[in-house]
Length: 606
Image 1 (cartoon, helix red, strand yellow):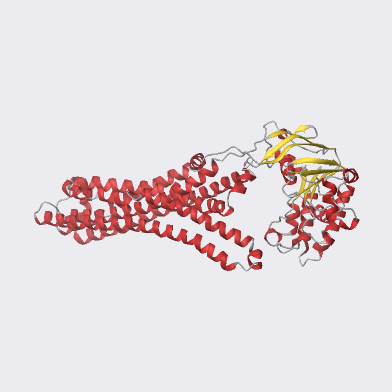
Image 2: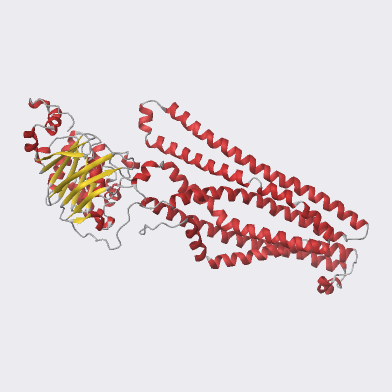
């Protein structure tokens, strides 16, 4: 989504239903037709038994059937019997179109909800994604949205249709015999409790079940994404036990929900049978006493059978509604989270950058109150090659994250080309920055698509040129399918050096004004390291380059080195200047190069 404005779940649903208003009206018409055919379905039987076979006089409401009766009993029976088939045909047509239209509306709603939710998740901060398990988010995007489909489309109209049918049947039954109508009505308090009394318990259980399913999905995602480690440490049994434990919680909660659903459904059936027994007994006695016609008893029994069927359906809908409301709450929780970073509406669109960077007393923490950067200040001139060095956790990668506007500093200012970074449009700024992360993240697609990820409209020539500059063209050409070779998820079918060179080509194809490389050679072989360093030497001309590194190989050529420790810049200068200081950098460098004969001073905290 281009717009980061948060939209509520209710607003999304209302907007969708407003757009399909015509389909809803047509579906409502079909619903009314279906309800009408349900109400008139048993009447042909009454006409045949009472007014053809028993020769009872037609009441005023049915006097229009007199011409049919006058044809004689055989012809009248044939005509009225055919009406049973005709009513069933119309009922089937109405039911088909109502089901088709409402299902289509439901699937379109799922499509829109997933699109909105996926777009919203992409706008949330990285700190949010660091806290939340991926499997839980997958469950919300896939399963929870599907659970809403039936409730917001199909079940809503089904509920209305069944409600109208039941109300219509009651009106007709009270008109025929108010005493028998009261007998049917007497069963309703018990039915209401059976149907809706367990609603809250089912809803709570359904929510718990959804949460458990999210935990199971997270466990599957974590294990499958790190299967190499699991096997290397022979921990398959341990992971199986953990999965079984999480899955058992889901099983128990699912059984509990199913038990309550079954109890509600079976209770409805028993109460329905009791009501039908009472109606048949009382109606038969009324017929024997001459106070009712047999056909009227048939209508009552047919209505009761038809009426309890929608009531049983309402029990099922109640259960679906409970589950859907639990899903809706989980989705709404995500949609209520505001994106942490919002562009200025008057933000500057970046066409190119000189590459001047300035940090002014920047402090930052990841929300836990522990400073990762503490009053950091430095300036990088356009076209400089700068190294950020220091121990793990010193704040090097955080500086890169702040430059990419992944996070907002708690205090201080960050300027690019003299303008505060918040004044730029985020996406246009990121398009001018090339990034190679420490972890070589690739998508499960062709090599061509992975390189073009940096520029989706890149030509084949541009892709190959970027690969050549990244020293990747040679090994790509030797692959069976060349640039069309499909790589595994996250590039698992390539070596670390090959993945890193493709990542570099992906950054190069953007023709960035600024390059940020986070440990580009930390986990690859010596040959790949040499190839990447050569590529960077050629690429750096005229571009500002920031390299985050633990390894000091080739660092002597950098224009400026920023040494971080405990979130502060404690030393700054060229390699020669920092060695001459005989400080923290001097110690780190000679710990990695003991063969030079210089012993580190091993300075304590600065």
